[in-house]
Length: 285
Picture 1 (cartoon, one colour):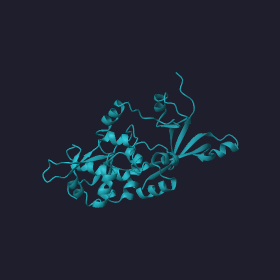
Picture 2: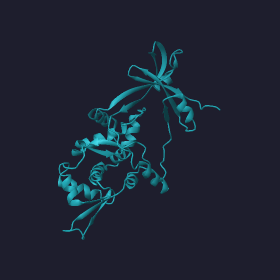
Picture 3: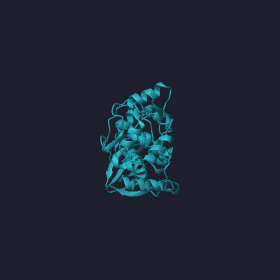
Picture 4: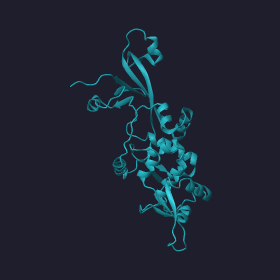
């Protein structure tokens, strides 16, 4: 396909929201149309756009997706002044797509997804799910939270991880040296005793970390989009923060005002396992 890049810019926050709302088919076409819009005017002739995407999707898929996304991702209008007539696709902007998908703040940096993944809708769904893990700090996240974000069951997440070659890191919270037998109630909550770096330590299993490499895309309109969402009186609602993770004690000290049920500081590695130190108290000044 001429003039079409080999990779397409996507937004992880939109990706998971679209999967959860079953609107990833429309999002796929919106991304492709955005890439075709070289001048950024947000307007494309329908006939020309369909022809440019004929190697990606059939005419019928293009037509039905265009219909299902009408009023949510774009509008299709008749242009009588165009020579020979024709229909014009007017794309909605990034901030409006975020609103339509219930995303009130773009938090994660955009990533490039290979164009090849756009040719199969299932493959596209797998890859945009995996973009969520293209981050600098791969903090622990549970399957339960991922299901809440993307609406994908844990067994399906595992399948997607394998297909997208997502790397998984085990995380363990080191509580301290072993002191007697682990009470049954603590054992039921996941605490156990094991040898860590030559010492018996009381530990607790934590959710895994996930990482999948994608080429990062320019942040471009992110700041402007977030500003526009805020200017409209829309504030991102954060759920109650259960856990926060920090690379160092200094990072924790700087962020102590952000309350969380549990806070963790990186405590090095033990083989392929990432160790964390659990912090319970707020710093006193």
